Amino acid sequence: MKLTRILCLLLLWAALPAQAAVYECQRGGETIYTNKSGSGCRAMKLSSIGSYTSDQRAYANSGSVSNTAPVRSSNVVRSSRSGTATERVSPQVQLQRDGGRLSILQRELENEQKALATAQRNLALGKANKGNAAHIASLEGAVKDRQENINALQKEISRM
Image (cartoon, rainbow, N blue to C red; front, side, top):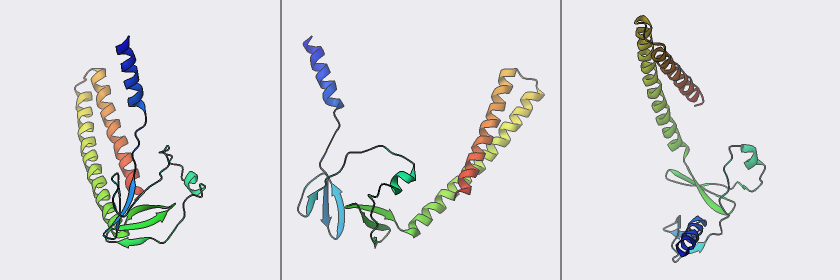
């Protein structure tokens, strides 16, 4: 009985949300965030973590975001929003990342097109050899999967 109570208490304790203090520090002209206090640091008052939504209207209508002029340094753009600093990469770095992403997507598209050709050959061979219905159905499924992957990749590439 005591063991059960102890286990219940341990489980309840483990289920409590973890919280740690976060400090904003100025070091060498840079703003850093850490969980350790030091000279030039101030404790941050952070709200609890909420849920994510992809609805952009929720952000546009919140009124909590104030635009200020960003401060640029190297590859990072720093701006202040709602009293906290956020970091964004510079447009040049983002263009490099987008180019890398595009090349990866194009390679994936080429790989899927090759896999589709192979799947179509396998399906044709399976039908020519009059394989069993389950095997032919799995080959048709493989062709359909490849076609859906190609469509998804082409759609993603068109967004860029």
